[in-house]
Amino acid sequence: MSKRPKTHHVVPNTSGGWDVKRGGASRASSHHDTKREAIDRGREISRNQGSEFRIHNKDGRIARSDSHGGDPYPPKG
Image 1: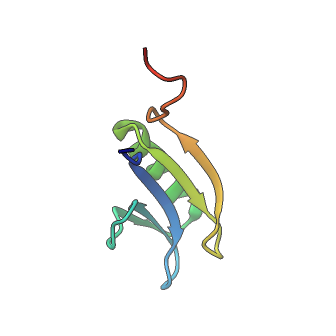
Image 2: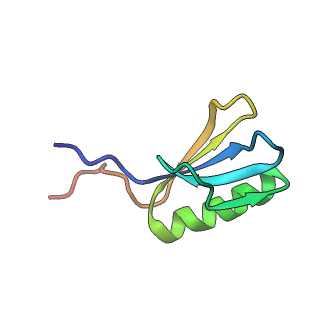
């Protein structure tokens, strides 16, 4: 059984601005007027929690992905 890594995402908000969301969450962890602010806050959260960090474009597709500690490679042992 594989355990999926925790993720945090920067996604566009339909009402304007950008949200930082944990993967699978319906509510945003934080909301920001600019994408830059959302990326800075999202990266901070991701580093603190050792999660994968995914930055989305306005169309919703993933533009960039950063790892902050959850990589299974190289494998332990």
